[in-house]
Length: 141
Image 1 (cartoon, rainbow, N blue to C red):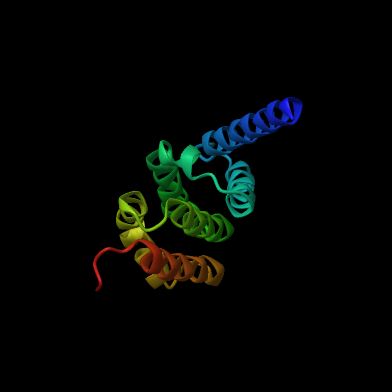
Image 2: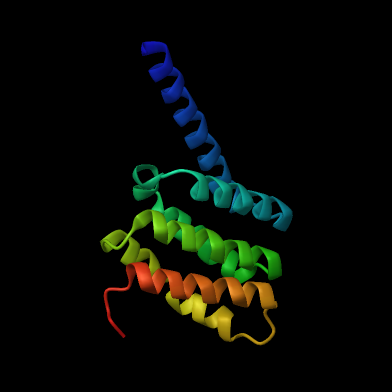
């Protein structure tokens, strides 16, 4: 039992290290590297509960997602929208989730209404807007 617990702790630590790497890579100059990092984050956030880990890093991650949505194109924006949805799900309906949603809502609307943005980016931002609004919006409107 003790070996299994220490092995589980080590797996958790490795997973967190990979997440930190992905978060750092979101600031890379290379669009391909950022997309790979977003895919890694999408996989991690959709396969396990990481709310404790994300709680102290939510602002850093939402700032990075904001940059991906602003400066990225097509696939990068679509992935950023998906990761944002998963971040909102992980944060839940409390003040943390509301804070993440409130900070990125204008940008999601901007990409959604931008006729030059790719259809996949617009669709992803529409989904993020709807899901995050459902989960984390305190204001009923």
